[in-house]
Length: 207
Image (cartoon, rainbow, N blue to C red; front, side, top):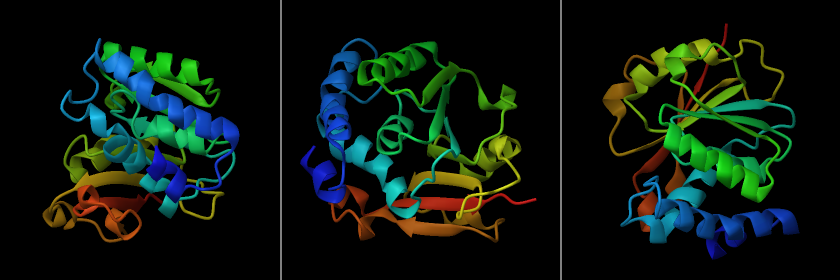
């Protein structure tokens, strides 16, 4: 929790309380439904919450934009981002009903009014959004092929609509077929060993 306060010092009291509650909520649910590796749950604030919030540093989401979190699992990166951006609408989807039930419960416990959760595969989803976020659910080219239909083609925000993808390791070959993308190193903003190989791929989707 201290890392959240350190890197995001301008949280409201409500946001601070919500982030403080996240750890216990996920500890509770993880004993019942395995949404985070049992070996990793003690690192939830660094490996999951702060990792999710790295998107916010590079992409300060604007009021009234819409975000789709694909393969959210128990709610990452969507839930932490929804706390940080209460005026942005987040839709979190996953194919597993048990994981979506956790998302529903966590969002309700935190009083998040800007989160919708649905059990659905993205292949069947037709709704469109300003941005799609995800934590490396598949190879990047496959992810783009599955989700680009869900990006709104008009972009009122200063950052063009597109895909914001959390990814680790060497994925240079996965980007070979793309031209207009950017890669951001999370270790530049969060000096922690966990983030040394963690990146964000941003691919604008324009008409």
